[in-house]
Image (spheres, helix red, strand yellow):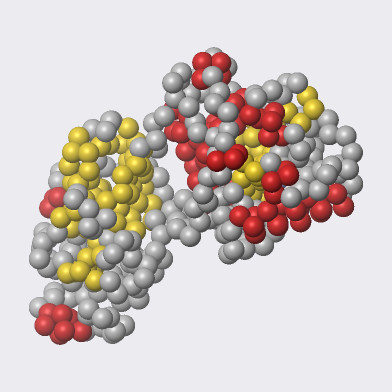
Length: 409
Ligand SMILES: [Zn+2]
């Protein structure tokens, strides 16, 4: 018996099972595939820590009805670019706080404008601290600080057009940027990237993303904001860039820059109206597991009220997640589980694409409490057990079945 942390649910159960667990099972993905289904569908995206930022349930800023955005004529913008939303599909405007709302100082000079619409979006980070105060007030204060730094550069106002706080609050940057965006009518000339200031909307994301990835609240709002900008100006999502693409700078940080392909994909999905995602927790109707899968609330990293755990066994005894895949398309599959030292370091997750299965082994002894990407898969439409957690692995540490999320990409 290997050593384990003391779990509230652990001791009696483990003692009962002592000796009954087959140690050192030589399991393989081939065995699992044979158990669950024929064939193998390889993930074509690196499996590992999710590229998506860790979920942060703390921040969900409420909409401010006083700042409601005007509705644009969908037909007027759809003609501009093939990737603009189809008529009838509108990207909801995020709430954007105007300069007076967040307490900006008055500009110290004349702000130039151009009548031409921007043709791209540049993503920046402010290189300020990764604060854990996700409140609106904290975001506004940082915006005021940044404006002062930009004044110190000799600039007439905040350099960028828009700012997103770590809590997901969006603010107008250089004064006048908001009305231009709302009216799809040219732009104010910014000061965020030489050579691009009259062509690119600059978005500053509060924080430093050299190593850290942005919080989910920031990320989700940035996707919405970019989709809205693309809609208003007819910009293709493929034209979302990092500052470093145009200037010798680390900005927007190595970790954030690595997420730009995902940002373009999510913005495109939002524009196309194809966003589809389902989350299946172990309490959901789509979840099923046998009686060997017990229930625990041990770890605070759980998704929802509780999760299920089982000892490894050389048996086909799966915890399954059934979903209806709406169309033949590519889907990202993610898992959420508590990471606890003493949970299994090689838990098999079996993904059934409809045309084959693929097994991904997950280390559940660490890295929990966030969505972990299991890869992106081409799937066929239909209702089936899309994901299964298997007990068929080595060791004696518990395998965990908590929540999975399936998202069309
Ligand atoms: Zn920058």
